[in-house]
Amino acid sequence: MSTFALAIGLVVGNFLHPGINLHIKAGSGSEHAEKAGAEGHGTVEFLQSIVPESLFSPLVGEKVLQTLFVALLIGFAVQKMGKQGEPILNFISTSSSSSSCWAWC
Image 1 (tube, rainbow, N blue to C red):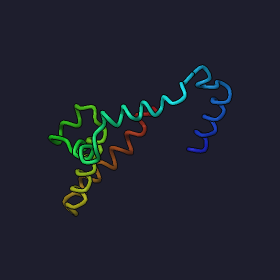
Image 2 (image 1 turned 180 degrees about the vertical axis):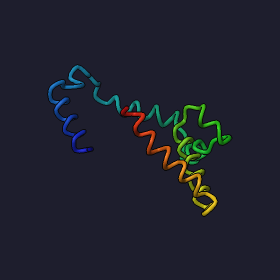
Image 3 (image 1 turned 120 degrees about the horizontal axis):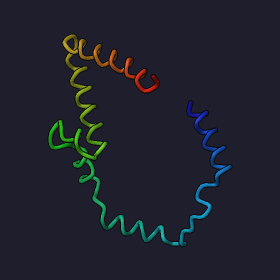
């Protein structure tokens, strides 16, 4: 499927020529990089921003990494439950297989 998507991208790119009227000044990249570095945070602040304040705050917020982090934590917790977590895993697998039809039907 990714090869098919790559072929579509190459065909569309060769016919439409995206970015042909985009004029970028030489050296503007370094200016933007310096500005981003001055405003950016370090690695520790980035990692701390991934951890949400509560389990439900990522559902209403705009940070996707927090949502993924909570999903991983819940997934690990359900797997750690062993036999008691099997009904939850069965529910997730049946709902995810039926939800694929919702996208196409």
